[in-house]
Length: 82
Image 1 (spheres, rainbow, N blue to C red):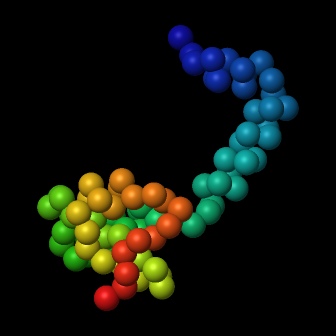
Image 2: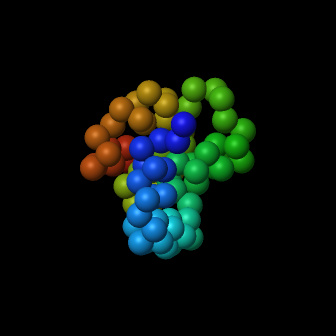
């Protein structure tokens, strides 16, 4: 059985066209920050050790415990660039 969303878009072709147009624009956007940081993690060889590459003020990055990085208030970057 299909989801309610799928049923809705099957019954409303105009809404489906709008959604597909919006999705195509969204898929063309830049890579998200998390994907970008995962790439840096792999490059540094830190993937899977409990640490994350974290964005800091000034546009830099640094290694930080994953729990601290992901629990931080996303509105403000609290780590200082070294």
